[in-house]
Image 1 (cartoon, rainbow, N blue to C red):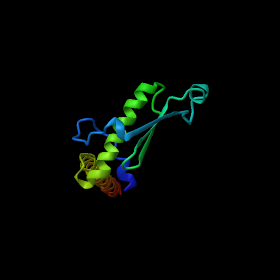
Image 2 (cartoon, rainbow, N blue to C red; image 1 turned 135 degrees about the vertical axis):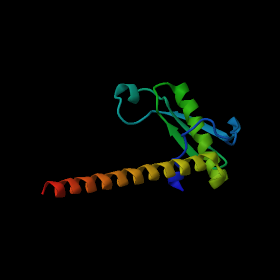
Image 3 (cartoon, helix red, strand yellow; image 1 turned 180 degrees about the horizontal axis):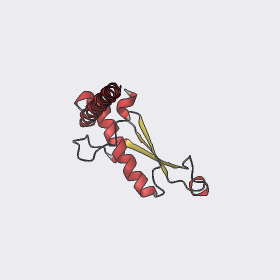
Image 4 (cartoon, one colour; image 1 turned 60 degrees about the vertical axis):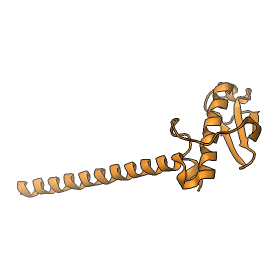
Length: 128
């Protein structure tokens, strides 16, 4: 179910479970990764934990602590919704739909490649 949790943070207009601030535990830590002094000296990375489910989200997408707090809450809300509702979750349904579209696009590309190969072969035979 780990890939499904990564499906979170895709859309805003989903019917998600509401989170109460009492269920959340928030910490601010130093971020990691590239960025040098801007990253190493500021604690603008947000670690948000949903206590009832134990789901933890770490967000360091921007340099702004407030934006990271907002983004972390959105991600956590989608992951908690996915955790409790499972396959009935809008996040899950949307992930499945996007996977289907991706597979269809891949299939069409493969068919086009096959057609091009056949066309090339026929042109080679015509030249001979």
